[in-house]
Length: 76
Image (cartoon, rainbow, N blue to C red; front, side, top):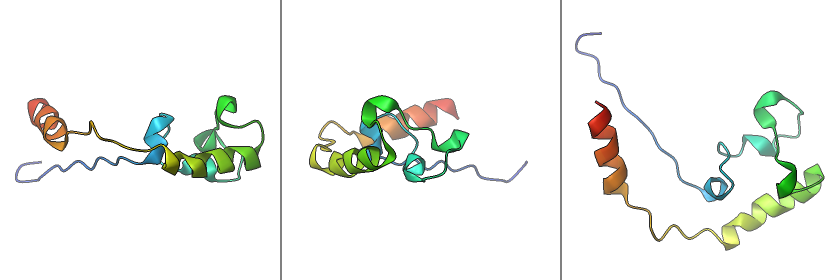
C-alpha cells in the first residue's frame, strides 16, 4: 500500500484496571464479546455497579504517553 499511512489509537480508561476491552462487557447480552469475569461481580447488576465504581480508584499517575509513542515507533 504505497503512500498509505497507518495510524494507531490507544485508549486508557477505568476498564484498564480489570484488563478488559473498553466497556463491551457492560452489554447485557451473553455473547463471547461481552464476557464478564466472575471475580468482578457474580451477577450482571453487581458487575455493572463494580465497573461504575472503578472511577473512584482510577488514577494513572504512572502513565507515560511518550513511552507508548516510542514503543509504537520501534514497531514501524
